[in-house]
Image 1: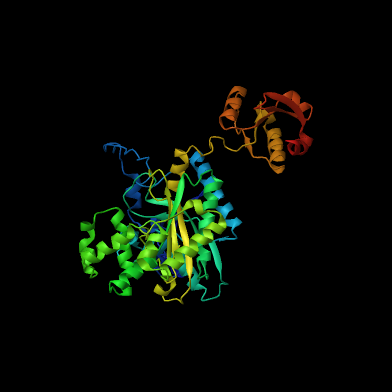
Image 2 (image 1 turned 120 degrees about the vertical axis):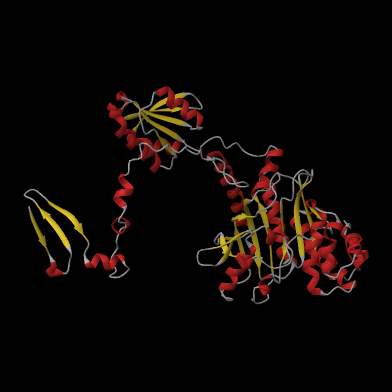
Length: 498
């Protein structure tokens, strides 16, 4: 055996040669050392850099006690959901209804990242959404949050175009939203939400169009005005009362946020917060007295016929009559919504039986873009959660069945020699537009039939030896329990007749 040192090329390498092989005993070149220290631009594996790798990988562990395996928790994180195929079909169906309605009203779909800057949501107005953020500091030391709502993202996107978007803008989205909140029926920590927004229209025409779209969806899924009502009000009502009481305009939004909580907590629970705003109990009692009003005539007596708030409400209701949806609309002065950025009309869809929480809600937010440093732009929109509406449809027995997979035909080769022929049959059926489930491994005919019935398939295409010799496939109609033979070359024609 010969040892040769290759010092002339600057390497400290000991190489062992034998007649049959060359074995590297040690190889630490100057270039490798440079790469390991961060120079030279080369990539060095951890195995090369770790001098103890041999000891770590060859230690005898047979005498060491085995660590007990920890069983995985198969539940999703609290407040979240798994969507198995049946639930996924339900979700897809619901989203399709939303998309269909939005398209019918001329809205375009958009989306945005689920991860946003935390500053987008921290408006310091005492909103619950600010307290319920899933927020953290990322590896770039940036304060970020999972979006709790979509409207601020939309505002950011509009600002990013710097006036380059043609108005009016009519957009919709179906984002996943996250809020760390107390869970009840129909309320989770993550949910999907149908958002429809109109930007660039200052009048109540935009609000009425949104309400009409909402009612169209309710009708589309089988709900009536006996099942669902929509409470409408205007933030201007509270604004006029506060002005009358001498409360400055800059406190309107924060006051509305607190007043919105009175539906859930007694007055004493927020008295301290109200006092911080400079509102004594007499002011709040005056406000709550107005908020119990449930007719336009009554609010007109309080505010006067010339009141801008009264005029706004009367115009909205008149437009709703034009849409033919007045049976769904109820004036309710207690509706103020809990987000600080609302400025005018606000509305909330509710279960008339009073079993479920609010189904959907929204309103006008003309000043939102200004809070982000943008130009004044009128805007209105709503958010419609997926969880509550599904619960309502279950209660009214209006949900379709989602047990069927949507598969048209199950294709099955009766033995392995015919499997290639089954590929041809499946390909032809798919090319003709069918949804095909191909059985990928040998199964008994009884199993295949049971499987086809379980997934709700309409047909089962069976390739047997005799059929294959005749260039045919046996197709069984599972609903009619009838069977026919179809030429493989004529499968497309057969599909067109179904």
